[in-house]
Image (tube, rainbow, N blue to C red; front, side, top):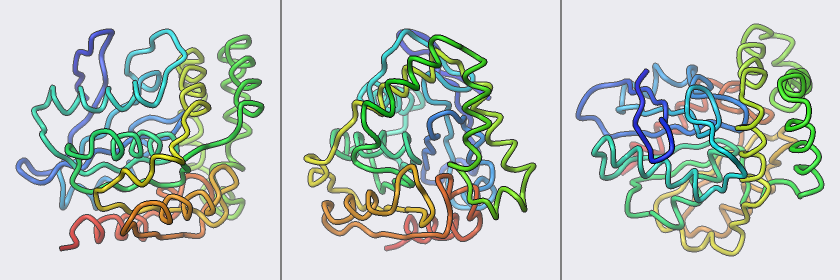
Amino acid sequence: MASVQLADGVLNYQIDGPEGAPVLVLSNSLGTNLHMWDTQLPAFAAHFRVLRYDTRGHGQSLVTEGPYSIEQLGRDVLALLDALQIERAHFCGLSMGGLIGQWLGINAGHRLNRLIVCNTAAKIGAPEVWNPRIETVLRDGQVAMVGLRDASIERWFTPAYAAAHPDQAKRITDMLAATSPQGYAANCAAVRDADFRDQLSEIKVPLLVISGSADAVTPPSGGLFIQDNVVGAEYAEFHAAHLSNVEVGEPFSRRVIDFLLAR
């Protein structure tokens, strides 16, 4: 693990894979950390210099006063790239990470080679969903985070996967219970306020959209909307709930690698 110093704190990151290989940045979902990508690491690191990081408010990265915005989180990524002297990179983000990817594609496409957004949408949820959650977490703190963990299994994984792989499901959902309540609430606000529906056409970099057919948080309709509004975008759908990279594993990794290595 390593960190870079931002203006208001440190951003935690980890780099794996051969020096000199194309850089692939992986961005975590709301309530997880960089280890949500552990399943992909062996396959990705065979081809790329894999740069994982904990989004502000998560893992070992800085927790600052909220609310945050997706623009702020996107600028954190650019600051990370600048600190590591990386001019251009591939970017793959899931859920909230997918929103960050959309912001980067719209506003900083010159820093991207190819872009993958997974289990996400141009707008995720409505204020009446996010505001009560924010209020509960800020009021009840870590107790609320444990409650969210217990409720997240059915949102993040299909029942069949959760039953067959309880240790893996627990490993991921425990990340939520360990997340800073202040950081989580601030990121909930960032997701609540993000709306890129009218800006998607500004994404010009090659784009792959991945959805989960059993994802109730960000259904395939949201991914298809992104594909329909970005010229040349590709689309893939797997039988999975919200964390398709974890649930699908190798086929997910192979689809991403095929897209990134395409000529």
